[in-house]
View 1 (cartoon, rainbow, N blue to C red):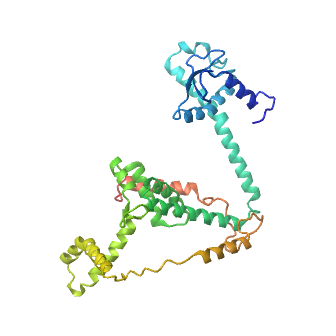
View 2: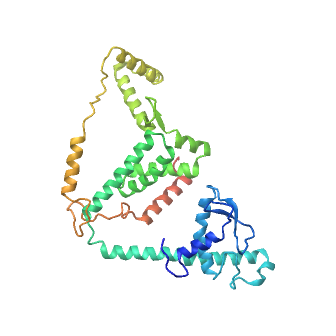
View 3: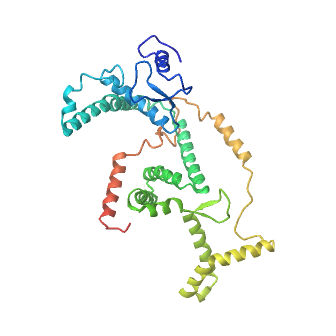
Length: 347
């Protein structure tokens, strides 16, 4: 931390803060006095770890209010607040409070946000043509790979909340890539857990969507994937019936399917019979990994070379979701909301 000999000098501010602390407590953050004194503004009790984040979040807001109302201290009075406000009725106080709060938000928050947007738009207009399209493609490909990796890890360890957060990104990806069925599935899932399902149903959908067939940590599978495996196993059993297929027999196979599968698996293990599952030995990927890294280094794929492009992706953007049409995306969501709220289609 360096001093600058100005009113905003951080060293002077820190010295002033330390001078207001209670000498009977060695902590850096103390609980404030309800009625501050000139020489001492804090108690001898340290601020708890639960209150400290709230206090740090309030500091920028207090700073905005102090600047906006030209206050010398947080508890000071401002000429911009009418002196007779204490005797005014409640609606008048509310109108004044809303007006002053909106003024602070417009000046210190929305204004800075608009400036950031203008800078982004200016940069987009000026530098888009000179961007490194190969670097953009490589970083976007990596982002998609990481999103997929996070989804797989969330499934393995049964992290339902992380899986739901991933579905929000997947919703955008499916919309951008025109995957209509997966996009609809994303909409129905997110709409259900955020608006339509009861708390009990929501908990079941979020945390009961995994199946662990082996037991142990990190061996969970997606419920729909396990259902596909069971369907394939059931079809193989039904196929063995030949012309003897009937609804009664197929129903019996469905009820005893897992029991028969477990008996078959234990029998094969005891007889050292290899299962006919098409399982292949795990391959050593070290050579392939080293080859890929070598080509990436030689091609300087992750080096920013302005103006570089590839004939297969000449318009690749820096942002993975830069091509998402927000208006079209919102229109799709509102259309589906109306469609399902009118009960034209069963949810």
